[in-house]
Length: 235
Length: 117
Image 1: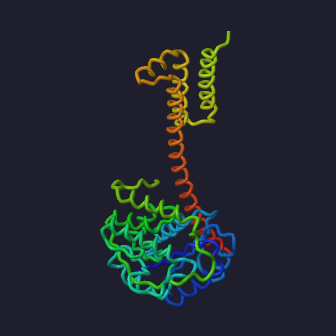
Image 2: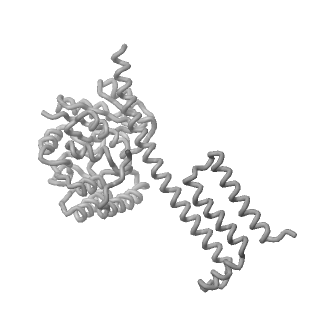
Image 3: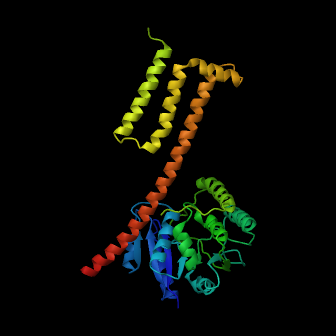
């Protein structure tokens, strides 16, 4: 049995985080849960502590990339074999956890995909277009078929934990972090995963940021694709 | 008699002195002062020898010589701003890494603290 850490980055998720933690515990009692509170201004930290779950609090809001990477650094330093990342808003189903974990031994990264097979997930049209666009782009760049590159439901093996602790993209990291791994000769696989509409709080992606999102992510994917040299990491 | 030539020489010298003084007082790091010193020396050379700009403009087929000055000034600004954004990128990476290490350390410390009580 390997040591598994579920990393949940949370920013102002006091309404949904308790349910997310309880659901994970009810499906997988053997995993450790780590919530990383990205400078929330609400009671997220207190709610997590109430559940008896470990919480690390960033001193201020650093964004999803830096928060996620903190989890991977923690997983690396504490000798975890597998790190799973899950959203704090309850859109990922803990029932899919065993499925992700069952594939992580023969792969370096397992991605929970909404579109691999028909699931009940229904996205707004524009978001669907965006998701398809990035999947197509990444499939072209990596020469491997991906259906859901923006999914934040992933299980990472030891090799990926170490790579992500070294380098992780800062904002909107999901798509670029796939290309980064394929450049490092990692084995990636998608498995079907249910995603629910969010239970509480609001999505971090407002229409206003969408244009920036599209351009920034496209640029970083294209640059990652031509980046043969090692990304210089801090000592 | 005060004219623009004398003024620009005075200004260039003053500019260089200010930069060097800032470095001496450790208000400006040597590595960031190099571009400014280069700029100051160029200014001084141009002020001392105005014909230089006119000759250069003639070689480059620029009819209006001062345009060359503006071009140099603008290019210098671009280079310097690029340099600054490189510095900011490095700084923000370092700050993030420090924040992450601090967050993890704080978590460890609070466990030890709870164990003691």
